[in-house]
Image (cartoon, rainbow, N blue to C red; front, side, top):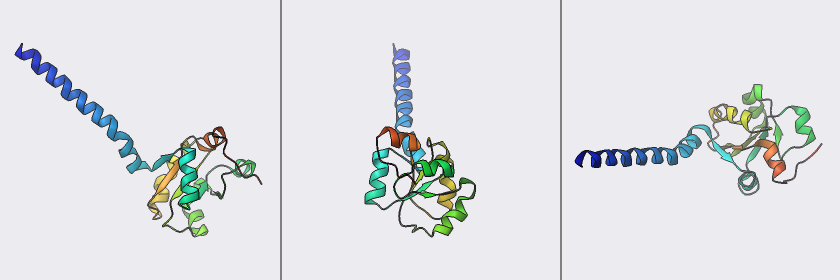
Length: 138
């Protein structure tokens, strides 16, 4: 009976460790790789926090429809493009691409430029469209 109690205790401890890790991983991911933003959260950052919106898509996609206030940035030359825009580093940055995959890759490059708070639009412009939010067209 004593041996079974020890196994039960080990199982409970393992469950505790696994569930604790599962709860902590999203926080760790945010600290390491920036914050993933829903379209609603991105709207709040843009409107209330005056976030800079940087669009990493090709120019044709940008012209077909972009988030309000978005600036077109060449993902291959992010540092130079951001320096040229002379953005205020006190404001957060929202990185946008078509699906969210490319903007996640650009987070570290933007962090190196001194921006403390960086978010990516989860699901990219596709998620923005699905949320029926407006796009600016040229």
